[in-house]
Amino acid sequence: MYQEKMSLCLLAYRILKPLTALIAFLFLATNLPAQHIPGPDVILTREYNSDNEPIIYAVNRSSSPYTVSVTFSRLQNTTPPTPNPYVATAKPGRTRLVTLRKSFRSNRPVRYHYKWRFKLGCKDTEPDTDIEYLLPIAEGDTTQTFKIDYIGNLIGQQSEDFKAYGFGINKGDTVYAVRRGRVGRMVDEFDNSDLDKYYTDQYNFLHIAHEDCTFGVYRHLKKGSFLVDPGDEVEAGDPIAVVASPKQSDLGRFRLLVMYRNPEYEEGSEADYWNFVVPEFRTATGEMITLEPNKRYVATHPRDLIFQEMNWREKRRWKRRN
Image 1: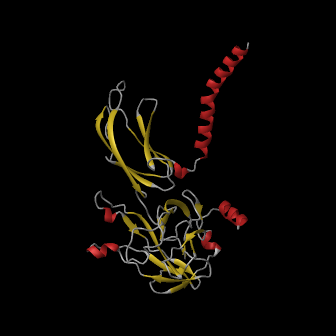
Image 2: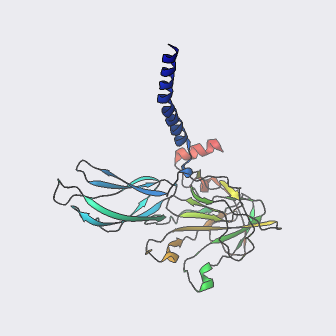
Image 3: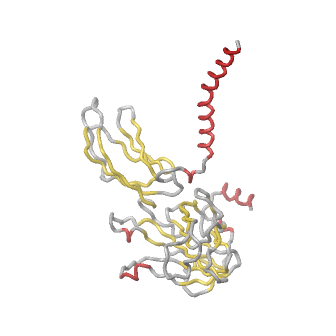
């Protein structure tokens, strides 16, 4: 009897052990944050419809929109999509790209090969010129703006529409979102030792994707000071990080760019991939102001600017929280 009970216990253990491991795996998988998903931000998947025709999807596992380009070749029993390569915007989640329809022989499968690539930004973007931006500093604080030149000028390259804004504030001050959006890519790994150089690529930054497919890019943020995570929704005037500061300085300096994918971009011309927006800002002394370098501006965070991209439910929710 004892041996029989032991055998039953051993059998139950062998059955339940993998089930327990599966339950634990599922629990962990469903509780992982989105930014911990390994692999590329965008992948392609396929399904088949009732006619056994392949449907190609883009699955965007990030919190930012991407442009996906798919080139089809070696097609059998179907015709290539128009145009080929097929280019589309893949926003976060799953986007249906194209269905390869059968040509003639309905009893024969569709065969094909493809190659694909993806890059940050939407296929076509029309920046919303009615948006008014907040200064990226605390309400009532003052900033001294400074000029930022296009780095390509050092090697003879020109950019007609490059536009970036430099803001000088006090060491330890917080940087704020200029507009509503969703936090995308972040780098939070560099110390602040290279800030005294004329140019460096060793800096912390974050992207915030806006509703019109433009991106607010905040550069030179203090390591370990980020107050948001990828996927977070932020409102205009929300704190996002602390400014980076050079060693032995009481000042902090950071940069802001508002940019979008150039709809006329062609493969190989990487320097022309981004177009830039010239935002108009609300300050304590004026509305729809175009900032100029080497001037001082005082920030204000009025509700009408915070609410300008919200619907009435979102406004009510914001009022309850604030």
